[in-house]
Length: 186
Length: 127
Image 1: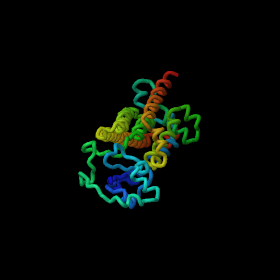
Image 2: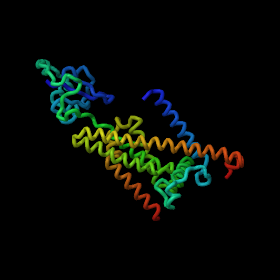
Image 3: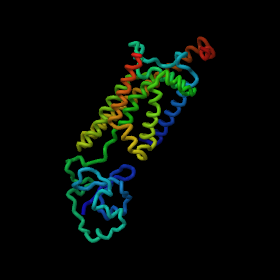
Image 4: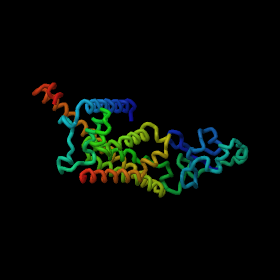
């Protein structure tokens, strides 16, 4: 009998549980599960050994209680990927990258869009590396995308502050010279 | 991140946004010199893909959609897309509509968005 990890509703990895113990957990048909020997996380209802969780009849599995001793007793299973067990796909940052590419145009800071494009490049790598099974590279690309987006974000904050300060200075300056009223009428 | 810091950031962003909208509503960027100017336009004399979007926002806030479209067609049409992205990523839309995200914010949509921006950029300076 295999021991399973699953991803809970908040995206956290939990485990390990035997199929019987999984009945105590909140495992739905669409919950992602993983056990040794599986290449990818799968929906729980696609795993034959777990189908009894959703059929209602749990009798068949009660008899074989020979709990397997895991090679690694730690929280992480030994995997074919060495030190990187299959994970749910890292955050791609694609939405943020696209927004960072479009939004700067509104505030006349089109130079920030270049950072957004760098973000898009890394963000799309996250998915393609992940699909190829290269989880380390996928996580690395995710980190790079996050880094560029954060750089863009900080520059944007600085830029907005600069605009705000300029406007305030203009108000004070023009206000003291000509009076706010005249400014409003121009 | 600390919870109170998070709330502070959200509050600051909202205050800034509301102030910006009031500002854009009250003043027409066409007639006031308060608004930031496009460095690309100043440097090259060509309009960038975003030029006119502040005027467009001013018109939109006055419910003048035709005027807004005339100032910057791309940005006005991109607004629903931007809101969709924010909704999907930050307001829980991703879990409810995972397929929407795949379609509108997948790898190919990024290519489409970039192509549209470049096409609009070239087009608006030609015609």
